[in-house]
Length: 359
Ligand code: HEM
Ligand SMILES: *[C@@H]1O[C@H](CO)[C@@H](O)[C@H](O)[C@H]1NC(C)=O
Image (cartoon, rainbow, N blue to C red; front, side):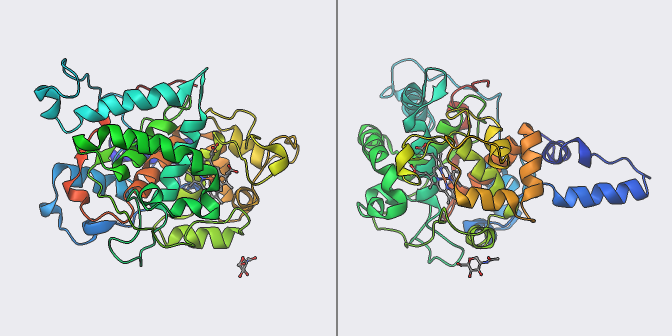
């Protein structure tokens, strides 16, 4: 997809300008300012590499991080060669084993027309493994490094209590696939993307492998509180290179969500009327005062929905699913790379992503 096409998709029709519009043009610019703006800070070693030093994959990732490359792919598909995952033909392609993993994941992540507990937990697991990082975290001590499971202690932190059941699912997959060179860090981020796409309507997010595992617990206190005000949440995410629009896009994952710990009297209560589906009801229902109390709203979500900086983007995503999906995919790819220092050496395995499930 061309950059200009992406920009107009992100901004929706309101931002498509015609030359010579004078005053109307000024108004459109003002509206555009309030529309989603992608996060654009570079990550990892891409901060210092020159363009001529970049691999094909490095260039593709850099473009996604700049908000110009497409973060979604609905056309590149792959069939594993016959002979199974131990065949020489499979071992010759780094992505081949990931096709087997994708099949295993999709089978347990999409059932009865919705994404499952494992899918919803996987989306959140990817966030909680990666986001234990800020721009000032020493290299090798935080980010998307598998430590949420491998450390054995991160899971005992309060913010991870609802994720405890998902741990053994990933440990089992890792045990099956680690002899094929599959790291826990890659498995968790792949799982978070396959999971989003396993909720009907979810985007097919591009994926890159090569992350390195870390058995040590990442720094505590870097994940946002569900009771924080908007400025605290935006500061927390800014420290991770994610701007206000990115926060809104990522919070959209709560479209699929069912809470257990915020309101213990309503275990399993959803955050919109259609849990397990990647639709925009979460955005519209969070700002609607008449939403029934059987839908549990997080205070942090209400705060971001109503904040002066973020509410225009919230409204934009309520009305424009393509803009939200593109923004979510780009901001989540960013999340999935936090802390990693060999982005240029990654391999793109988007082709193994399962097919899109329409809403
Ligand atoms: C301000 C930021 C955020 C806060 C405070 C927050 C907080 C929470 C809380 C309290 C829950 C309910 C856990 C439970 O009771 O079981 C939850 C669920 C969830 N969160 Fe977030 N979250 C945030 C951002 C995100 C982001 C960035 C993502 C992913 C991109 C995400 C994905 C999810 C998912 C998928 C669930 C549902 C899990 C399930 O249904 O099992 N959240 N979040
Ligand atoms: C947000 O919360 C922080 C931390 O509790 C507090 O210091 C700050 O004053 C609050 N900001 C607003 C605008 O309420």
